[in-house]
Image 1: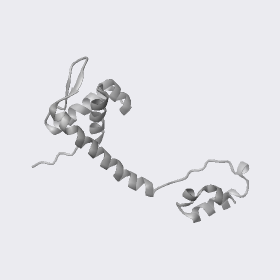
Image 2: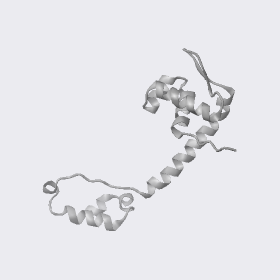
Image 3: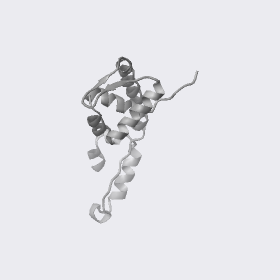
Image 4: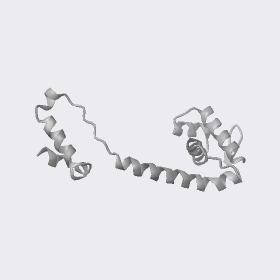
Length: 131
């Protein structure tokens, strides 16, 4: 059996098509062109070897296989989001852009104190660091 990996962007495009009932609105939601969304859906359908969406020039609706796949597509995207959120949460970063002549000579000391306080400093509130 050949394992066929799914393109998550294609799955997301399919979910938008299903929920919004339109390739145009799905393209807006995906921030891509309508033709790109159509191509992603076509490749997803080829990968799954089934038709997910029945469409006419004025109407879009899920096929029976598309309806069955929609729930799993939501689950797949949710698991992906949870997995990436776990990593993103562990890599919080604070970027400050300020001129040293505006901030004064205390800025390097303040930044050093924030670094020593660790990532939980922001949870406690940066106002404590400024005291």
